[in-house]
Image (cartoon, rainbow, N blue to C red; front, side):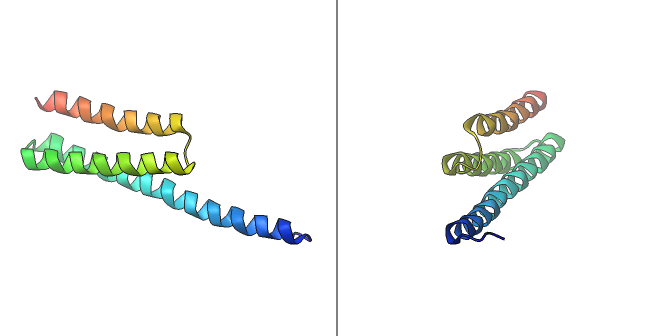
Amino acid sequence: MANIKSASKRIKIAERNRLENKSYKSAIKTLSKRFFEALDEYSDKPSADQMTTVETKLSAAFSKIDKAVKRGVLHRNTGARKKARLARALARHTAAAS
């Protein structure tokens, strides 16, 4: 335990930030997983409704990744890599469905 008041305050701030960063990262993983599940459903039965669902899930994941980058939770290259992975998966599935 810290003996200095400012050090104990920094410990509290670091813990608060860690939990907030963890929630962003967890949300990104969850949204990505939901996108991939929707994409699998679309590849099984391609339809316009399924495609709108996939695009909605992709948009939500992109938004959360962009917010995490803006807040400093993720490095911008990491965010770009995650977005590229999602976009590449969509391009592969739409090319296969066509």
